[in-house]
Image (cartoon, rainbow, N blue to C red; front, side):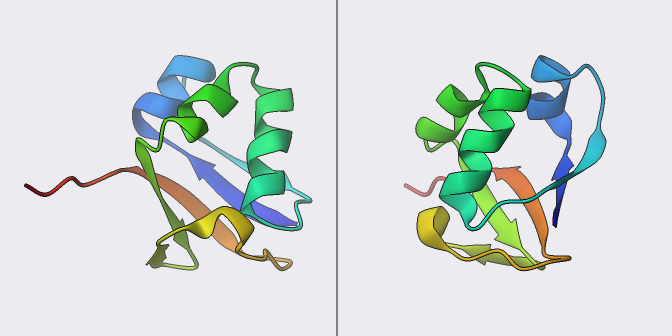
Length: 83
């Protein structure tokens, strides 16, 4: 199961505090779906592209289909915008 760290504004908005959850997801897309089931409305945030995804300490561009293994660590971070 992937270890998912939900922290910051995302966690406060949907859970009220920072937490770590274990989720049996095949890939990031599946993870988004499962987290939206656990915390209704969270899927809209993922769809907005306002978050970056870190998998095992590396930011992954276009992580939607990135496979997740047992003990994979996933962290959602505010997206950094250039300009």
